[in-house]
Image (cartoon, rainbow, N blue to C red; front, side, top):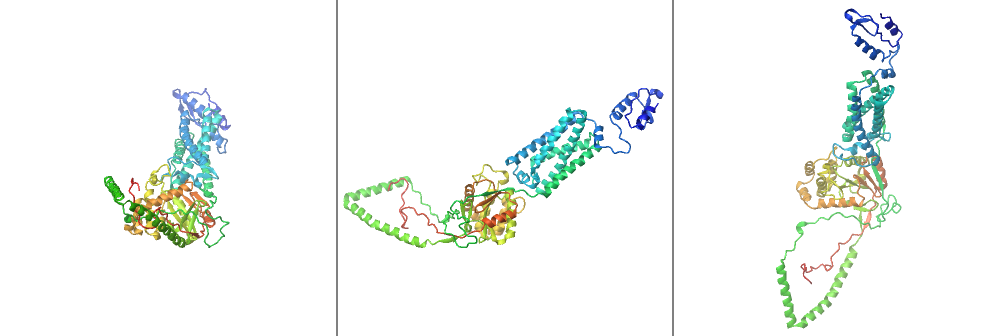
Length: 586
C-alpha cells in the first residue's frame, strides 16, 4: 500500500499523489508523514491538498547538503496583492523625500522650513555624514528605492521565477533601508545633535518596511535572516566609508580685486613697519552725541513772528523818512568794513588749520579688496587691538553655522595667541534692525537685542568685551536676552550698561554693520573677512584659516591726515550768527 511513497522518498523525487489508497476503518484513509509512515487517518481532501501544496511544490534537498538561497526562493510562496501595496506606499513616500534632498544637494538651494535650533537641515546636510565618497546619501537612497520599486513591479507581473527573485530584492532593499535609518538616526541624535525632518520622514518609511517584513514574516524567517545579513553588510560599508572620510569644505572662499584705495602686495614689502602714504577712504563709526548738551530752540508762534516783522518794517520806514542818508552810509560802511574782516577771518583759521593737519598713524583693516576700511581702535575687537593679524568676523549669535565657525576662530586664537584678533560685527538676521534680509525666522527673534547688548558691553568696558563675546558662543544654542543681560551685568557696571543700552549708539552701530554687509555683496553669514579674501559659510578648518590669516591678516600702519569737520557757510568766523526763522526773507 505504501510502496510507491517509500520509493519516492528514497529516490529523493517528488512523491506522486495516489488515488488508489485503501480506506481505513470508518471510511478514512491513512495520514502520511514525510517519512512515509502511517500516523493517523485524514479525509481524502486534506491529503490531496497536503500533497499538492507541500511535496509537489517543494522538492527535497539532497541528503547531506545545506539548503541554498535558490532553494529557499523556490520554497517561498508568492504574496498576495496586499503585500505589494503595503510595500509600495512607504517606498514611494521615502523616494519623494529623497529626491527633494538630492535636488537640494545638486542645486545648492536652501531646504524649506528647516532653520531652527533643533531641526537644522543645513547643518545635517553639510557634514561628511551626508555623503559617501562624494555621492550624497540621498542619491543612494533614491537608487535603493528605485531598485525596490522596480522589483516590486516585476514581482506582480513577471513569470513565477522572476516574481520569486523580485520579492527577494524587495526584502533585501527594505532591510537595507531600515538598517540605514537606524544608522542615520544615531548620527543625528548623538553626533550632529540636529535633525533634518525630511531625512527623518524617509528613515521612518524605511523602518516601517523593514519591521513589517521582519515581524509578519510572509516568506519565512530563514530567508529573512539571510537577506538581512546582506543588508547589514551593505550598511556597514556605508558607515565605514563615512567614518574614514574627511569633513567636506562647507564654505566659499571669495577673492576680491584690489579697488585702488588700498595698496597691493607688490606696493607693500613683506614685514614692512613703515606707515604707508596712502590716504584711504575710512568707514567711520557713528559718533556719540551728548544729548544733555543739546539746547533746543524755543518754538515761536506765527502770530508773534508777524508782529515782529511789522515792527521791523515800521522802524525802517520811520528811519528812512527822518534821515535817509543814514541808511546809505550804514550800508556802505558795513560792506566796506565787513569785507576785510571776512577775508582776515578766513585767512587766519586757514593758516592754523594747515599747521594743525599733522598725519596720524592708524591701524586700518581693509576688507573686500579695499571696499571698506575699518580703524581697529573704534570698532569692537575680540582680542588685543595691537595684534599683528586682524580680520573681521560678521555673525549672528543665534546662527548655528556662526557658532561653529566661531569655535574654529577660537582654536586659531589658541594656536596663534595674541598675534591674532578679530573685529566683531554682529549682524542680526532680524527685520527690526536689518533691512537687507527678507524674513525673520523664529530662531532670530532676539537677535537685535543680543547684538545691541554686545555693543553696549563693548562701549561700557572694552576690556570685558572679548570675555562676553566668547561666552555668548558657548554651547550649541545662544542664551536668551535675559540670560545674556545677567551675565553682562556681572562683568560691567549695571548702571553704565543700562545707560549705554538705552542710548541710540548701539542701534547706530548695528546700522553701520548692515551698511558694511550691503557693501560686501550681502550673501550668507558667517563671514570671515580679510584684505582680499572672504570666507563665507561654515568654516571648520583651522589650518585653512591660519593660511589665509598669514597671507591677508598682517596690518600695515597707515598715515592718515585728520579731516576737519565741514562748517556751514556763514559760520566760519566762529562768532554766533543770527538765525532766520523759517519762512521769513532776509
